[in-house]
Image (cartoon, rainbow, N blue to C red; front, top):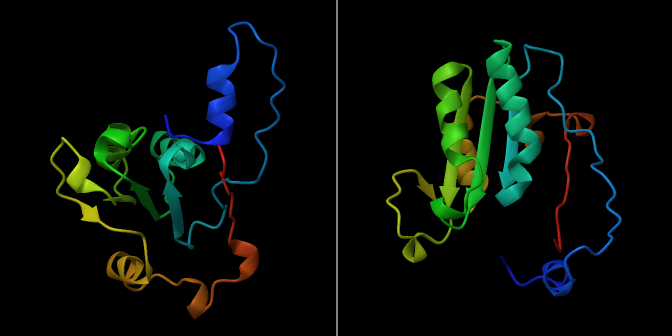
Length: 149
């Protein structure tokens, strides 16, 4: 558990304390136009809505082409990593690009990408897929920020 203000308050609360939780909010769903490739960028527990999207796409055999870039410090810190990797076997239209940023601190082997998700990594894996600088309309870009949790 990282040392954030939110987590410090939670850990100091007595068991049985009453809390008020709001959300979830936002509009992170798979678009309807199957001709458009979906490109998702996620980090840490921010993977949760994308896990749902790629799981549904596999279960319903949706024809959407999906690229999911998923960044974590180490494989042992990556929620749902095994499940997200396994979904590639179920859905040939789905590609997971997982990357780790702190592998020297890991106790597990890793053969995937390392480093931050950046333009070079996106270009390497997307090749011909269109991104914002080359024509994606801002209305087609969704962003959700999970900070301070």
